[in-house]
Length: 240
Length: 283
Ligand SMILES: Nc1ncnc2c1ncn2[C@@H]1O[C@H](COP(=O)(O)OP(=O)(O)OP(=O)(O)O)[C@@H](O)[C@H]1O
Ligand SMILES: [Mg+2]
Image (cartoon, rainbow over all chains, first blue to last red):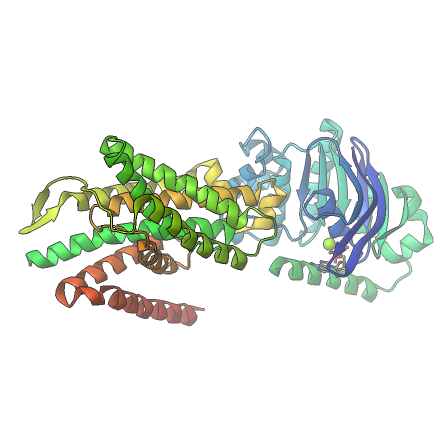
């Protein structure tokens, strides 16, 4: 229901996405992993129709919603307004149904989004996307800045939306362990190219993927520096 | 004493007009980041259309004035189409387009209405307050302007469409993410700017005759009012408009009419410098 064929996206002189072919079928949960600067964000922006590809085709069937990297809330509006604006193209603007999925938001409804903690903001961003009643949801960095318990809560919610309503998911995630656990299939993007793809189980077994994305065989300090990188990029994107 | 009251009330009335023009700047800038230098044109055209409605078409006053305001709204939409209709036009390029449109509009205005100042009488009669005889039109201007600004506040904070426009002002990328067309909202903001300028025009023309090039004075005063709140706050545009209107009126009354704009704008500048300094100190 979501597919890209030979997609090329250029940002100025950089070719951020270079001939990517990928697809997400109805009701499927798919992960997209890759190092910083691989082109993941650019790819989903193109899929969401927010940047124009230089060439290639994109096909979307069904309602698509998107949680952008760096949250991008309406910081001077209330949480409630942020949520209801998520339904701009939908029908039901009442955020009540989101409070059932993300109960933590109910108590924050009147707060200005800009006054929330990073994790709370991420919950609003996810809730806002869900307000569109999407059939396919793209999430650019689910775990960014969130406490592990919140991440596993959110992951559970996404999994249950998937089971109960057949929500399809394209998940970009620095935490490859989480991505592989949640999604049945995954793509690995490096330098704008898909360098590996397959079922999560297959990829988890691949020596290369284990070394690069699951921290197996690398020293703990290396793992820590990778996490440092991702928070750097969040800060950069947040201030842009 | 009675002179002071007269200057104050007339200053407040004129200031309300400036606030309406200023709110037009704010409405457009918040969504599009474009400073619309054709903002005064909307007021002039609205006043002229209302005049034609009254004199040539013989329409009732209220209808003629409503036509004037609507015409300004339509003009706003058209100017918006020219200024931001093409994708990827920078706000600076759009600003230049609005300047060009304002000057081009002169030709049309002169062709239709001539180059002499135009006025028509507004609400008839006067009333007495603290010994001063005041035009009823002042009350009308103040009342209508405050209602319009109140309505604007309700629109932006209470209605879904208004919140969508506020969302564009808050974070355009996020607005696109949820599917709001920032460009369409920008066009709408231009129409809104046209309506606001139009209200100013039909309300002020009975007090201050307008000619084709009155747009410059109106735009400068309105811009000064709007800049008071950094072009982003309707409330501050109202405050700025009132300060400016009253200052002009006092200077015109007690000093000399030809100084009014200079002194008022000079005072505005001082206030803004003070404000900027306070902001630096707070930061
Ligand atoms: N606005 C821009 N102009 C020019 N180049 C850009 C722009 N934004 C991103 N890039 C470049 O495009 C490439 C892909 O960036 P992108 O943000 O898509 O990577 P990413 O995989 O999402 O990285 P991260 O994991 O750090 O979020 C990078 O080389 C980046 O430097
Ligand atoms: Mg990214």
